[in-house]
Image (tube, rainbow, N blue to C red):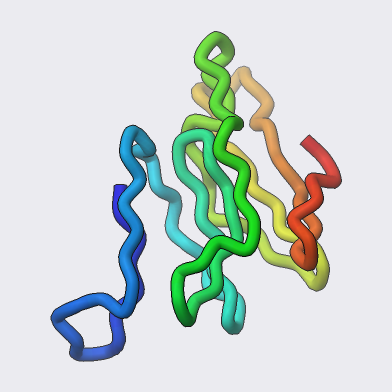
Length: 109
């Protein structure tokens, strides 16, 4: 899985990150100078200008319950961001993580 930032018309990225063994990248969500990313077992907030993670959680995937394998695009609010997994079937309630954006503190998991 790759995440990269390109300037309009450029053939090379401003920055690029490769994540090994992290499939299922959800559509990144840009909010001003920040971008929220999620993929297999990982959610995080990055600086759009240089691709630096301001915070991230990398150990969310639960192989036994198949939790946090795929995410919907993040939902960004004034002071929080919510990551909601895509449920495996209609009978399983999706798990979610609500994170305070200023410091990356998980408020609900």
